[in-house]
Amino acid sequence: MPSVRLRPLREDEWEGFVERSKGGYVEDMVANAGVTPDFARNKADRDFASLLSEGLTTEGHYVFAVEDVDSGEAVGLLWFARRQIDGEEGAFLYDIDLDERVRGQGLGRQAMLLLEEEVRARGLSRIGLNVFGGNEVARGLYRSLGYAETAVWMSKNV
Image (cartoon, rainbow, N blue to C red; front, side, top):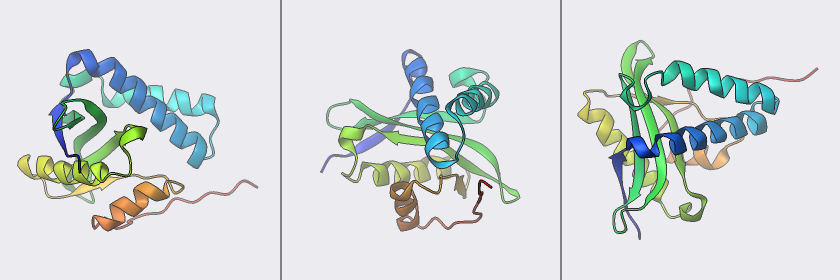
């Protein structure tokens, strides 16, 4: 079974990360939040400009390549930040995304466990995240790792 490690993203990987992460965010919003592609693209642009205003040097934000241990090849990405979670400082997972070709091999689970190590190493003891309701694969993974739903947003077109 393959295994992965987290490696800090390099400057030469930054633009690819932004393109991939924004693209996934836009796709999720359109597919699962019922917004138009234009709205989703504009929101993604605003969110990224606000959250990662200093790129890889944005204080309190940590962006990693998920790297295959054997080959050294980047097979995904992971981004989290220090943030208030339920009244205490914790880590908020903004994005985890593995290449389509390596999904279903347990690498997402490995990356999430490595995230826990990174968070603990920074003196934090809580991880929060958002997952869109239609993303059943991710919701199942998070539940299997002990994450509990703390809020559910719902909407209806009338």
